[in-house]
Image 1: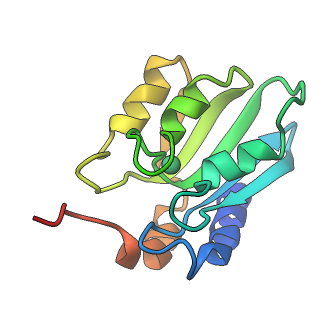
Image 2: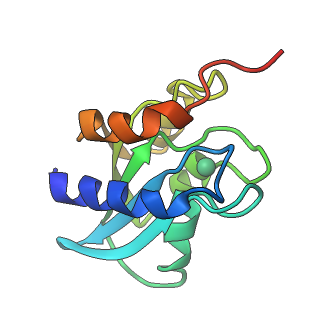
Length: 146
Ligand SMILES: [Zn+2]
């Protein structure tokens, strides 16, 4: 566990604005042996979410035991882009995931975490939650529009 990696993900997430909207501006870092090997943020709708963006930087690389730090719970559902939780679940290199806050979006609300756990990943929730929530809260979808 390391605050500095989550804070790096939070700092990087600011790059997502304003193009990511209406999706929340999320940041993600991937760590190997204590070093950041990839950084990602949420791109415009229909393009990579933060997790998928970070994964592009390590495509094809043989890196065992990676940790991922992501400011928001990875999406469990297929929207305009494939589910990030499923993409992480399918990547055997990512073994441990730190999620700062659970996504209140009714389509997620822990389902992304369940996918990761079911795939055998070690999942931690709540790292730097106060700092992340302070920035991210106003962008989160809390109920579906009728
Ligand atoms: Zn996603």
